Length: 135
View (cartoon, rainbow, N blue to C red):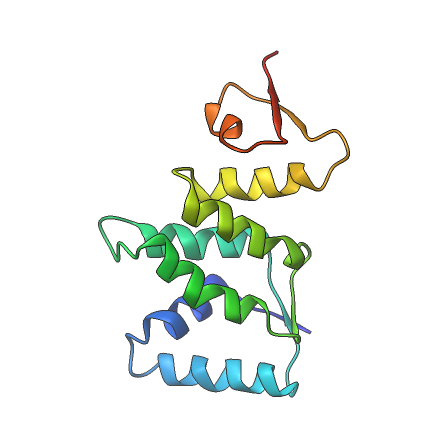
């Protein structure tokens, strides 16, 4: 199983480089057909979101990022350790004025029995059921 880096997601989503984007489309099609199995990390996904959302580069709306990235993450032959929480991560990211990383952390905290987090960041207060504690 091979690692899938950030730039492969970006070239597929952006379809901006004629010498790379078609190869990425073919790769994702092969992954979808089960001919190739790949894995990636939460950090790679966060980097994709960071680049796409960047005001100086692409400035994609949050919903457009979700709509482009989530179907790729849902491919059955793409392994991602916390794959099941990404629907919730993107729900939080699209609907609340919080960072992608905070959305990810909130989704993780929601999977825990105590649902508590030590933080000075008030973004955690935006989600009912998550309790922010100050040290």
